[in-house]
Image (cartoon, rainbow, N blue to C red; front, side, top):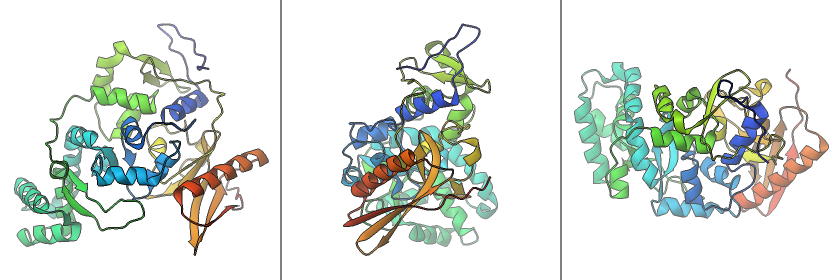
Length: 377
């Protein structure tokens, strides 16, 4: 059932936090697991946050029916998906098509990052650095340490970190396999996306299509929401250009929200089963106002600084943290509630935890435990 909304031209409908939660979860494939394949899901979600190697697999396990980690690993080996710095200057797993088209769109933002490193780049010709870096990594994929040494030999007075940051910002560099493959390890080695995929990147285009894709995966949303998700600025004019084809709403604070007309907006009372999300899941990072998933009383409790924890959604909202520990052939999943979970919620969380362990580990023995709830209020 769709969410009940009432509007006039002068007074757009107000969507409650719960209505926004259910709409976002439906589009994020978190209300019910989808039958779509891994590659289609990566495209629909406009990439998976991949700051660490395992989270993309757990993101898909929480969203897809019948998902096997080998599915995503095969896509990486075949180069149908790649790991590349795009949105928010963060490593993401994208389809090959998105890697070729999104990176040019966010390239100006990546280059602006260099202002923070300008002191370490005094005397460095950035055009020459980009050309030399491209030559090096396209000759063969280079480990970061090796690339840094080559650049430092050319600019010995520069800051070593600034040199590698400059290469990453100026060039569309991908992390090549075996880095990121399931059950395998490998150091970070870099080449250009064009070299890895054997085709040229697309010229940067207007972000109109990206706005619509964002709304289909994260909406209804405000201009500031999308800017926070993408790490871009000055998108208001794009939304204004698209306004005639969009619906508008207001949230409980009066902020204007945009949406595509045919996107799902489920009834706020639609059941939302527990979901185990990895650190840095984009559903937790995809909006400037994150209250639709993170209750105000739990804001900031899913991470400290650049460290994020695995999170558990209960009834659609962040209610607990989780971790796994392995000892020999046994894996224990520990749930740390952030508030009191009733008996029924604990039973549902336990069932979802068992499913997560059965899909994502090869351990012979599984155990699910609840840590004591600590009331910090």
